[in-house]
Length: 328
Image 1 (tube, rainbow, N blue to C red):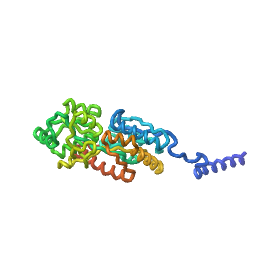
Image 2 (cartoon, rainbow, N blue to C red):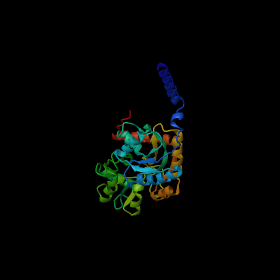
Image 3 (cartoon, rainbow, N blue to C red):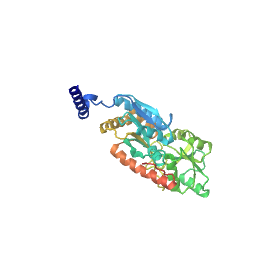
């Protein structure tokens, strides 16, 4: 009996050792990626610009990956719900965040206890300016005209944005600081932001370009300036703030992120699909219609870009007393 126990014990030890030395003998060969549907997590609600763009990109990516890429909306706390969900997901590439400038704003305002580097990043897909707009019948025809009116009556003009600490809020702060305007910043919410300007509740707003194109075409609003580096092809007659002598530049970008520790070959496959989807006819047609600039940027360049944009966000937030990073 003792001899039998010794044989069993020895066999068990050999089996355990083999499991660590040769895991494929017990788990089978590593599965090829992707081996099932991919969750494409959108940080904002259905029907908005992020949702519309994300759904088109996800559909095109599925064609190149050979599996369904399923859009799922997880709005809340300026993107914090999405980024926390993806951060805590398995690092296997089957859960992807449709990131944006919100990955910098929500982390630096303290909505989550981590910074943007808590995730791995696949790349950038597009960027777009956030125009400064007024109602079409407003008395200000130019940004300088608005600045002059603001200086005459400081603390009275209201500028609407999506929410406190959002990209639109920070762009508004940067632009108002640049023109010397002591404005009231109105966090109206994504759904109400445009309406506050149209109703007269707010005097102006900062919004993503994609949220303004139809209103401009309908002659309901006027764009006075773009706080970006260059003019936009869809709105070629709208000057940049820099052209007008004001140093205010902050774009809205969108891209993809995954859980930290995702294998390089998985990230490379996602990046390849992202690049092809971004240049597909469906996505380029949407860009032409909405006005965003398709500018794919893969991981190395994107990480440098994120660092640069994060520095801008941190400075604006610190100057405005909004910086509350809780990263550990």
